Every structure is written in structure tokens, then in C-alpha cells.
Image (cartoon, rainbow, N blue to C red; front, top):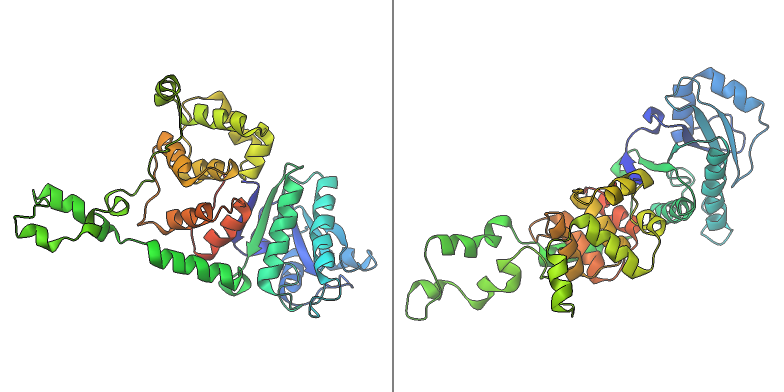
Length: 345
């Protein structure tokens, strides 16, 4: 997928370029800066001395030396001073300058730390939001794989309100798998609702609510002719996807970029009408197309999947779709915060 959030040590990332959250001297420091200089070896410092420093919001490039990365892009993030001194604009500039430099040097892969979120004190949730928004905007017009590298859980934070809202939604909607299969077990034992039997007294009306009897979303109830319905019975996932893209008015590129899918994979899906995607890929396209929950369920069925109430990944997806938030990068931020797989491929 073009934009990924990963937990790793940035000095171990095997990419074309890693980004160093440096200070204006470019002569090394603490945190990520110190770790990169240490892993790259003294040659990195010797080259940095020749660069004459770097202004806040700008970026300069050096070789990677002993690092797996070919290049190190050094950028100087702003120190947090309350948010009223142009910090946001300077942080955006760090990402833009670094990405443009990577493009100039024909990098296909680049890894960022969360710039300014360490000793420079930028609030982590705001730093993450700026990183994701700026990178995703760049990727709409450029082909590159970009990683946001998180060293540990303390380094990563989505907004407190979003985390709280999703946690509450999970608590309200999560159904333990054993409970969810209770009606199925009852039917297998031959115990049916009957007002004249003692067994029926054990179960109340909630036991057989639509949510309890099925993990999948209800089929889409859109009005269509009998002919259209019959034509769609044998429609594959790939055929449905291409039809939905045409109906949406989007171009193919607009759709796969919005879905956080790379061009090569989309070409495979387009050329193979029997292509079977992974569940995160299928959902990514549903999100890109801004499908309703019912339509998402229909698309997933074409790929052999369904949304379940006993799966936190699925519940988080349902939360965003029900709230009509189709920003796949924000969805991935939340999925990462809850230790779930990300959308895209």
C-alpha cells in the first residue's frame, strides 16, 4: 500500500531513503537524530558538516552510508510553542520538502519518523494528523511507497476523542463469538421458540434479533429491474468494482489512490475478472467508493467475506462507515491504534 504505518526502528528500514528529524546544525543530537548518526557511522557526520546547516521546515539529503537506506533526508521540524508561531505550516513544509527531495532523487520508497513529536514537544495526535494528511495529498499525484515509522506505543497517539468514541462503539457492538452462535447452537439441538414449551421461556426476543442471527450486513435493498438483478447474480468482485467505479464518476487512478492501493495491484484486479482480493483490499475499495454499510456487505460477499460483530477490525470499519467518514488514512490511524490490520494493499 502507498502509505503504511509500521512499528519498527527507522535505522533498520530497507528503503531508498529515511528521514532524519534533525536540528538546524545537522551535526547530530538525541532521539532519532542520534540513532541515525550512530547507525550510519562517522561518514554521515563528515558529509553533514559540508552542508552548512538547514533551516526549520527545509530538507537536505546525504548518503546513507552503513544504513540499509541509500539516502538520509535531513529535515528540521519546529519546536512546539503553543501552536501560534507557525508550527503547523513549518511541520507541513518538512514533509513536503522531504517528499520533493525524495522524488528528485528518484526514490520509490521513503520512511518518516513522526517529526517534532519527540523532544521538540509537538502534540503527538496533531503531529500524526499533519503527517498523514500531507503525505496522502502528495501520493494523490505521485507514485511512491511511504512509511510512517513508530518506534513504540508511546510515540503514537490518535485524538483522545476519536479513540474514546471508537472504544465506546466497540463496547456497544462487540458480541463474543460464543454468544453470537447461541441461536445456532439452539437450532442444532432442535430447541425452537414455542409459547407452549418450557424451553421458549429461556429466550427473549433479543436472542433472534437480526444482529444476533447474522454477522454479515443485510443485502443492499437498492431498487433495480429484474434484468439488472439477474445480471448481477454472477458478477465477480472485479466486475462489481469496475461497475461501481464507472457509476461513481471517478477515474481508475482516483479510486485506487483513494483506496491506498498501488497501481500494479489494481492492474491485476482489472485484468482478471476472477481475482480474489484480501479482506482489507476489498474493504479499502468500498471505502474509496464511499459505499453504505449494505453496499459494503454486498461487495465483501463477492470476495467471500462478511462483516462480523465478533471481530474488532470489522467493528471499527462499521464505525467509520456509519459515521460517513471515508478517509482511509484516518481509518488506518485508528486501526493501528487498536492493533488491527490496515486497509489497502
